[in-house]
Length: 410
Image (cartoon, rainbow, N blue to C red):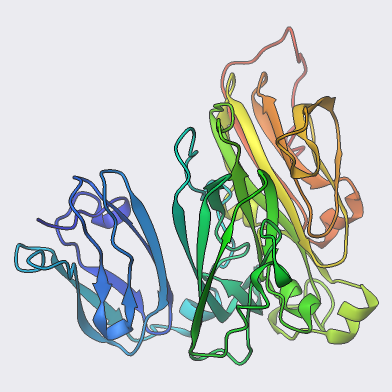
């Protein structure tokens, strides 16, 4: 019995050496490869995953790496550590200020759980870790984000209607603020926030039944709520219908937000949050997935001609409605307002999405090229709000016959 690395430099290695920088947020996904019961424990980091049972079952844990040192991780199911499920976790000193200062808090839009499809309802555990951290806002510019699991938006949560969602919210010990979470998919006081106001260093849990299918926003709901959201504390939960959703080739997860800084847009260095600009609704930055260039320069979306694409799009806000649009495409289907029980709209150019709202769009790719993702309040492009979908494949002159000029990006 061993742990096997997946991806990057650890791919295929047995009990790989896992590394992190002191103070760095670590996210780890454990996938059961053979059906026996397993978990993973980092005892010196006070981090432990739930046990996964059944081949293909998975769980994710998030924690902040502690002091530099040479530590162990292992499975603590009786007998498994002795059988070989043990590895090294190496925490190094911060090499340079840039290692921490330039942390990429933006979430890759392809980073989302796979479809659920048809299955019986069950209890699904969701672990959220609230972390306050300095991260990259733009080139040469950083900001003090408040996050779920070290990324903006927080992780996409995916369940089935009828599931019981078991939410565990842990607030980092070095947080300055109380944090919480309000699920728009939950029926009950505060969407869960009434039971999940968590002090720094503490953890609380609650459960709710996913009664209504659809795409819903979640966010921190600790006063001042708008401040917590503006600093990055939002995400989405998809509640699939009983039969699941139709199969597509690619699914992407994109959220829009605003950032309110004391200094004007484009100034370099570490930026301070402005309460005055928040209350006046005057953001300096508009962003997709947390930062300028998050889904254009850092994590552009990729697909091929002939592929079908589904975009799960939401607005964290906290203040501005989005006019969601993909330049050069027409949405074949739009599940307006995030509903999956009403018939979808067909052949739609632009979709309005309110703060705290969501939509699902689907379209087939017929022509190669770079497709620009925008809010069609287009002045916001000049404040950072732009994304890219890069489509490869053979030209289709019957549909589009024109020479793309360099630098146009379309």
